[in-house]
Length: 183
Ligand code: S3P
Image (tube, rainbow, N blue to C red; front, side, top):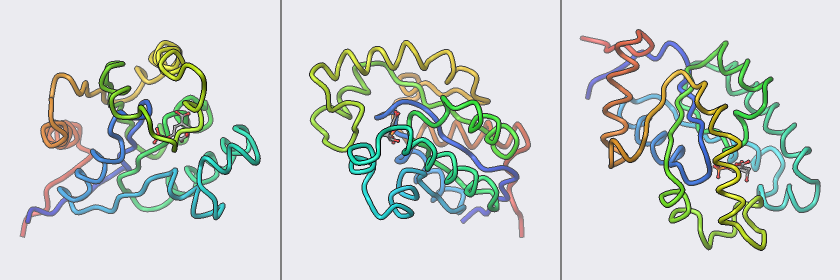
């Protein structure tokens, strides 16, 4: 197995269904660096699911938990982090990511995202009368902010998760954020 040094956390951003956790886990396995999902960490800290947090305390309570969790994760040694789709919308979180990580936007079109999220009961923002419209509105509203990420990978272009990961490893090495360890 090839071993790597990661100089900064790799932070996946992008909409629900973009594949942040799946691609993140795959990258983590490939470079042998730990993976963490900020939604999982929020659930662990709260002892509740994201759905329950939204239902019982509302979105702004969730967002402050999200900010605290990302602050902690970004202060740890470099790792692979998948964020929830809304995290990068926070200026504070973006500033923390810029200071301690490299942001990677996994971009996907509406059809791909919808195929992955439809019917799932785990995303509070989509438990509405017209979730397709909500998802389309989120794409329009969030794209200009996701576009400010350090690295942008379009899932259509690379197809499979493993080709997204290979491309990302090459880019991270080129940018000096990931180094192969020999010997
Ligand atoms: C959200 C995305 C979810 C989760 C929460 C809010 C968002 O994460 O953080 O439901 O605002 O887009 P995923 O992107 O992992 O589904």
